[in-house]
Length: 292
Image (cartoon, rainbow, N blue to C red):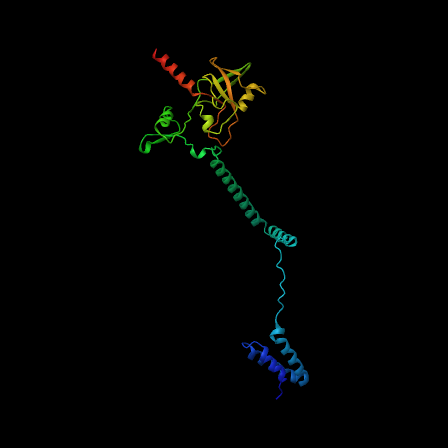
């Protein structure tokens, strides 16, 4: 019986993996018998020896050269991505239209909702004391007839400051229905965003005067504070401080201060502000005339 070279068999026993040695030897012996029958013993010995050397672990290790993984931002790969995507879009036009339309509508609606939420949450947040400012509301009625009013009685501001130590200051605002027309020289304008307010409006909120005395915005009952846009509407590029506006009942109001226009995310919006003391003076006059 023909047998392969012993030195080759010995090398295989020493260096081959013990777990697979028997299987490898069996396969090589079968091949060796086949080679002897087809090409002769001499050439079969040579092939067996060469195969044994290739199977030895130090020589049979696979190539472990590490090739760098492809960079996913490689320009060629990006072009290929776009080319593949374009082909799919052209191939499935109807479904592509549905998918793109749905994605566009979804993104648009999502962005609009985010912008709306951002706008709502930004209201009155620009004030430095925003975390300490509260709006007083009035609950009226009971049970299912209960209502919440954003207006309440004026004396509660003074009462709260006097009786509640936590209240540092208070601001009252009420719409002006007494003076609706204002005239400067030949220019007469109907104003619909005028308010009576306390001087604390300009200290509690960040509605700082850019012209005038911040410590005393209303020197007297005939003072008026206007916004920049309102000042330009009446006086153009002239200095508005000290200018006199005549109301519809010929009451003269002297401009004592100018504030910047209100931001759009402010819950307080106005063009002109009159002293609250004038409001109470007018009420007393109305009461006295009624009683007489």
